[in-house]
Length: 137
Image (tube, helix red, strand yellow):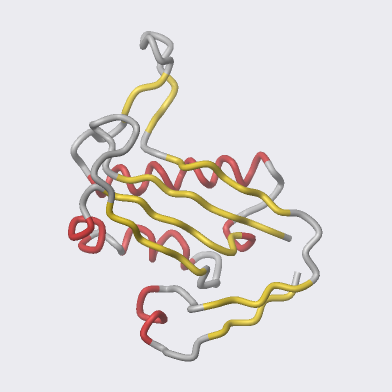
């Protein structure tokens, strides 16, 4: 896969993202559903429990860790991510903790395109962050 950054404006670089990215020579795509701060819990009726309720920093780290698990299962890694969508019930809190994402993606040496959307609520009221990812190789 060949990647080329497209940045008519440089302001996105401070957020570890490109405005656009031209991707060529792709053979596989992976679409990740929204990942949240959940972990398996066989004692729960839903068989999952919210991790870090009320803690946006912890939820960001857990959601991104869950993206890592899906990438690994697909035989990919963070370098394969081409776009991310972040959903949050607290935009200011998310931006105040953006270093969680910046440190996580820094290992890949890429700047995937991204969107940050403020929402009223996620699937469970305790959840503050959801991350969707698209990866390719």
